[in-house]
Image 1 (cartoon, helix red, strand yellow):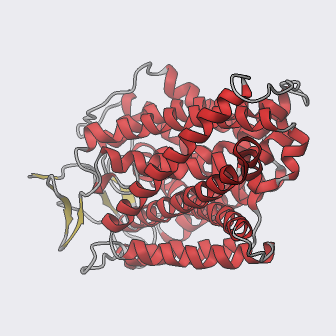
Image 2 (cartoon, one colour):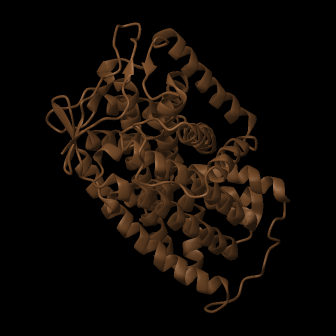
Image 3 (cartoon, one colour):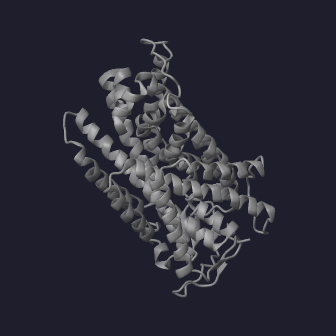
Length: 474
């Protein structure tokens, strides 16, 4: 057992609340704060499950048709670009996570590296970014739920997409209130089953695509629309890689964070990046890009039917349901932890970080996550939700890289990471440039909404918490 010695804060917000000076007690079993505790119930498999489970849903089951319509078979390159950017950020994020294994992840690193204003903008943007991402996952779930019913002979139409997504979103919020362990067990089970389905599908589809079984496909021009759509598609599908950093938001509940955090983040990016590229290759080998686009959010169902008939379609429908569920569940968990961390620093009202003494979960923060998610789900706008989520997370990732450079340049006494990112300072510098650069390829509507959220967050800091100072800020 050891007492937490990391930086705390000073100053007060307009309600007179100061950042909590936590004499946190860290044990192998829990992070004990005040009279409540966050149990350390997540191991490496749990961290990988959160990372892979969050990423695998949108990327493999919702995006192939939309991405192929934009970039053709080169959509595989778009996913590869996203993986490289994610990996460039995962290395700095892993170092920061082992130095500050706290619930809140990216917010905590940036507020300690760059100060309270940057921390507030990122903390609130992270909250909204995860809310947009979760809404995107849930709408994707709605499409797959409707397709599942259709495969079972129950035709209900797409008007049921949003109602089904709302019911599941509310259910996951309640599940997370009853305990991280329950949510993690569900996550582990979903991801294991999902990987089994995908592994079998990609093996057969890959052999078919290269002509070793079935009839060989006619190759299509790799990048029929040129290089620019490849980059705009990379900006759209980057939402698929948000999961690796969400592992860090539950660091306070992870066993042996010095070992498990970097392994979970880097491992989940590598595994999912390979799966994405293979999936787009198999999908664009089954159908020409233009036809694949006409299948919309559930194009992978038709790809499954092409290779394996009705059984393949049903397997993909089941996989899509599991994938979108796991993404939504993991995101709701991470959203609440982001709010919890910002509240403990007095940047939003303190009541937002109250912990339920019966279940040991931040129930108010979960409510603040679940409510906005359900509102956005009601819009049903898949691509806009995904791109705004990408925008806000890319800003977060760019600033994580900048925070690492700031902390390494003038290391505070408390900064003692168990893992140091290789290739410093090139890796974090390139990671920051690549993250922010990808934003330039997004649609104007997504950029405007993203900038507006950041400006509102900065205005909130000036109004509510401008006197709050966070120790550890350089």
